[in-house]
Length: 241
View 1 (cartoon, rainbow, N blue to C red):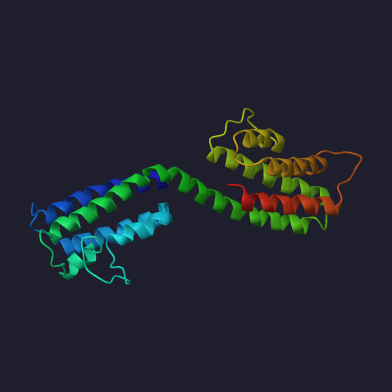
View 2: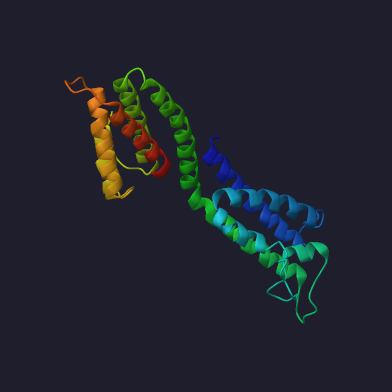
């Protein structure tokens, strides 16, 4: 089972478990404790929300955690943690189990909405790891430049080419060539608005230096040009996703 399948499985499992916990609140399941089952569910669920949607983690928590700034207990401020502690406001018609069920339903709905984020989050995580690997290769370029600027530039060009190809794959950008060059990748990425025109120009300039390093010509690349290429590739891996 790959990462994507594992996360989807966990989301579906948490959905099923949420329904079971809701049935405990409604008295349909009597051989299990809400407190125990909910706490186990919440621990797993908040971890997944924090990974897939850190921007919505505080919202998810708000249905369970008591607001430390809370000044009064009412319909709007009561949360599941109050139910666990056996605390309830003195209000006509207030049903703790029913209100806990509403909070749980809201958490479950938020959790299930995260299916749409799985691909994007995993792609960005994979790209970050890939960029870290490329950092090591660029470090080698900085060492190699002392011996052969041409070889160092050629290696930096390979790093740039591989990284842009990864970006294209993650955004489902169609590249016609089987073994595309930086130029073959640069235009489609700009066309699909993966990055802007200034970045496209920067990559075009880096591609020119790469070509100077990769193809035997009368002109030798200077150390300054190769350092520009290495620094430029480093910038791309930190700013293009």
